[in-house]
Each structure stands twice: as structure tokens, then as C-alpha cells.
Amino acid sequence: MNKWLKGLKNTLSKNQMVEIDRRPEIRERIRGYVVGVSDEFVILQHLNDEMFLDGYDVMPVSNITRYRVLDDNDHFADRALKVRGQTPRHQLHIDLRDVHTLFESIAESFPLITIHREIIDPSVCNIGKLHKTTEKTVVLDEINPSAVWNGQYRYHFKAITRISFGGCYETALWLVNCHESGDKKEIAKALKADKPYAKMSH
Image: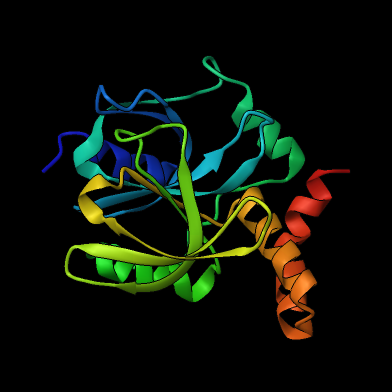
């Protein structure tokens, strides 16, 4: 078992903000609230640079090298979120038993999933709808930065260092794609998902 896992579980029960370091090859630190933990994965509700909670990041426990709790003496973010009325959402219903159930349960509630392969290329991510998983890979129906479908692509689980979903960028892509497709039912769903982010922009 990863030596940090017990401590991360404790931060979940105490609602403490954390900053997570991962393998030396992965330079980006992730900040936010732990909202789900298993022996395989940790879900963090992501804190962005503008001091808003912005979607979720799932990381393999095996990649985590250390973490620290960001209390009031370290960071004002927790107080800023309280003033803004933002609190972590713990009931996501994401199944963390294995990578297959992880992708499938994310796809049930969130239309777009972002895959990061930070060791291969930290500057690139891939976004799309889940098409299927196989024994060793995941296949996405990808959407490009113009919010247009761009074909199917396959990625090996071993290369994936982080999975993101439910964030402002993914939601905006989905909203634009639905709007331009003219599907009224999907537009209504996208507008509902985008509502919290629309409020943030005012």
C-alpha cells in the first residue's frame, strides 16, 4: 500500500485542502480536496489558479510521492472558497475499483473525459467521450479545440498519469458542440452543467 494513502483518507474525512506531488518525471503539483480514495486511485476536486473549484482529477495512488495539507497559515484558498460559497462535492458515485469501472462510471455522469500522459508529453491532453475500454487500453471519440468531433483514438492505461472531468474547459467544449449540433435535449443538459461556471464569470 502507498504510504501516503492513510493520510489522504484522513484529509477526506476532515475536509482539508491538500497539495500533491507525484513521480519526479511529473512536475505539476495538484491542489484541491480529496473526494474519493481507493487502493488504486485518488480523486481530487481541483483548485484552479483563480481560486475556484474546477472539476476533478483522478490520479493513480502509485504515482503519488508525497502530499501536504494546506491550512490557513499556508494558503488563503480555503477561506476564499468559503466566502464564495464553494464546498467540495463528495458524492460523485465514481467507481474506483479498477481502471475499467473508473472510466465507465465517469462516463455515466460526465460527457467528456480528459486524458493526460504527462511523462510522454506534459503539454498535451486528449479530450473526448468514452467509446470503450479493452484489457489494456481506452478508446475515446475525441473532440478538438474547435469543439468538433475528430475521430477515435486509443491510449494505453499504463501511459495515463491523470484523468480529468467536469471542469470548466470540458464543460465549455461540450456546451458549444451541443449548441452547434442543434440537439435541444443535449443543449439543456449542457447549460445545466455549465451553470456553476457561468456564475463564476460574473
